Length: 360
Ligand code: 57M
Image (tube, rainbow, N blue to C red; front, side, top):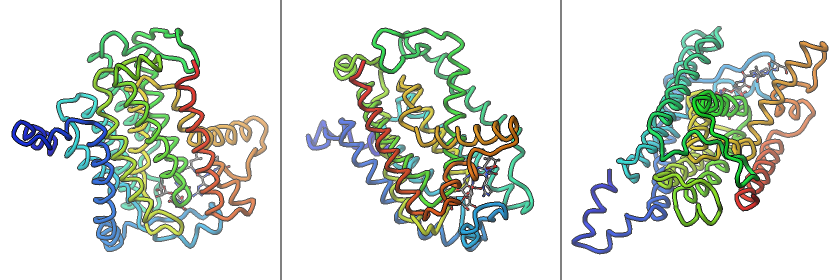
């Protein structure tokens, strides 16, 4: 909104011309989101504590988690407020991608909110029934996919670029719809699985947002897209600002979520962040690269799949406990050590992903 108010002033005062540039607004958006989360963070955490929105720790989990009982949860609200206010202030609101990504973030956040709310309201329940939760996620993924297909950007919307290959561009047609659902819903759930140690999920979310900021900027810029030989998506550049708002909000949240955490993000945060990343990946036409960019989330999800499959097929566990961060906890690694090492892996994967932009 501020963009729409301030930019027209450039006709009288040239200095306001600066608001035309995505790069400038991106920096301002990141700082705005960071500031909002740092300023309202303590207030929100206090309210959550007051309203007893505290975490219930499961008996089954690693012993050292029991001391975390009662830590306020649903701190994801802080991220949602910071990202959306910052984006609404500084983005070009005539851009359809901005609205789609905000819809995805808020939609998954709402599903997460219901899940958290049911856990709190019914202390013995595990939240929404898995079938209802998954059904709602699929529905939202369907809406996102359908919106993209029915409002195509030129004729590239249903193409699927393959990393490393310049010319391989299969057109999936309507099969692109289930792919969008898989990417968006899968990422949302994988981030949720990762969110089991202080700062473990928010670090890689921040790293992935930074990588996708670079990608959407290049994708939305004809010159860069041509130079890198990637698909040009008109209007995608505006999402650079959204990605940086995610970085700013995540940094602010990490201030409170770092070990020992004073707040957890809850499903309202983890489902929303994953949904947002998945949607950005789809819009930027770098859907498959998310496997690398969000490699930590993939590893966490795969560890659960492997554990369950191995137990069902052979009656044996592969890990001491899945998702894999619990395995290292049970091996005796200190929590901060696991977190920082997972962040390191995430940075390495992010760098590799950026490398693939030119390797084709
Ligand atoms: C969310 N939630 C955390 C917090 C956070 C199929 C199965 C593998 C599912 C999986 C599961 O339920 N995952 C979903 C994981 C929980 O965190 C809350 O949930 C929100 C995110 N949704 O924001 O509100 C706990 O994680 C810890 N935590 C922190 N710091 C943070 O910043 O320490 C979270 C955020 C918190 C806190 O202790 O209470 C969670 O882990 O529950 N299930 C599991 O992960 C369970 N694994 C399991 O059963 N493994 C089996 C099979 C099924 C694969 C096996 O290995 O044989 C474990 N989780 C727990 N206890 N808590 C095991 C038992």
